[in-house]
Image (cartoon, rainbow, N blue to C red; front, top):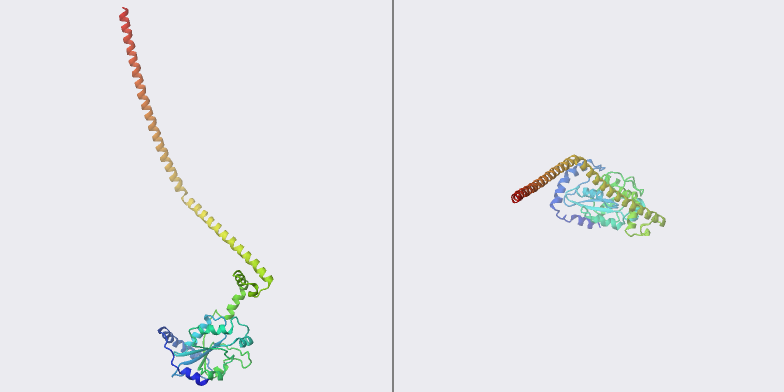
Length: 319
């Protein structure tokens, strides 16, 4: 097995993309700082120059997240030509020394295989990295954060104690604000909401592992929540209408004087026009009546003159 591992290590590393090569160059300065600050025990192990440097990182990698990916990225960029091996403990070992996991061992292995920084996944990784394990996989360095991990198996105070003494330990930095424990606590905190959501999606209480009483209570809570949401939506709609009314009222108050002045001006113009029209109509009527009265007077005057002529004629005949 050791010969196979050495043969694998001697294989030329695939050519990386231009973007990855730039990443290596940018990382060289940071790696140098980490190397100087890293507590490597008895001294730094010799760095091979004739082949890819085999770096090993291990862990549980439950609920694989970007904090895991960043630590593996740092391990991958420790050297310009790194072959990164990632060990993942199986379920039996993890449940014995750490506790239950959310994902199964196969799911955790597969998650690691899909991380672009990982070259090889080692299943059933040991809890404590021994010298035999390092030799078996021809590992040059082990990468992990510098916090001492108590050896729950009882073999020592720190699972990386032996690696540090050999000078093969390389420190990586943890990502603040994200961890598997934090994610699990978020789920536990909002557990009822997740169960209600999945009940609404069609899962049974047996699928979700809840009792009959809890299911009924959650369904009642779900109904109350839906009712509250509807009431809130109704209130928002009413609020929008009141907002519209208030806006119109504000607009009316701001423009009332101008609108009233405009109305009075139009009303005054209308009254003036109406008065002028009435006056003209009256004048036309008066003129018409004056013409009719003049005609009547002329007619009566003519009748009077005819009567005078008849009287004169009668007096002549009488004589």
